[in-house]
Amino acid sequence: MPTVWCSARSRTPAAGAAAVVRGVLTDGWLGVTALTVTSSHRRTGLGTHLMGELLRWATERGAERIYLQVAAENEPALTLYERLGLRRHHAYHYLRLPGSGR
Image (cartoon, rainbow, N blue to C red; front, side):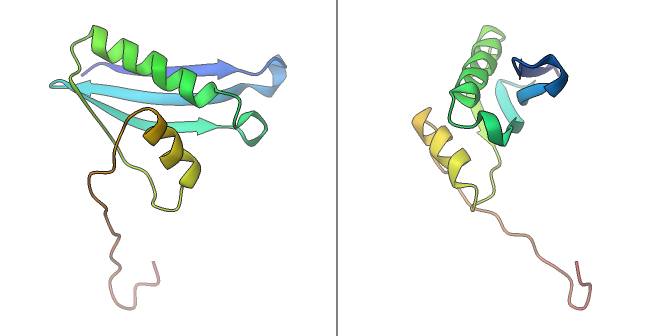
């Protein structure tokens, strides 16, 4: 199960990564997790660039399908994924046990 991290560093080395994404390839599926772009680097194209590199990596290794999980309220991420041609397939919900407080 190949896994890859892609990152883009800030122009200021001490600032660390400006964006990261992780992908895992299993049975022709690319699972995308942990796409994060720091607030100071949002809307600069880094998320699109990293997703493009991740998709390239995965297709070179036989990926034919992609899945990701995004919180319904994460409009910036949903917009990015829609621009990349991905479409919402279904929604999910978290359930809590009564009285659990969690």
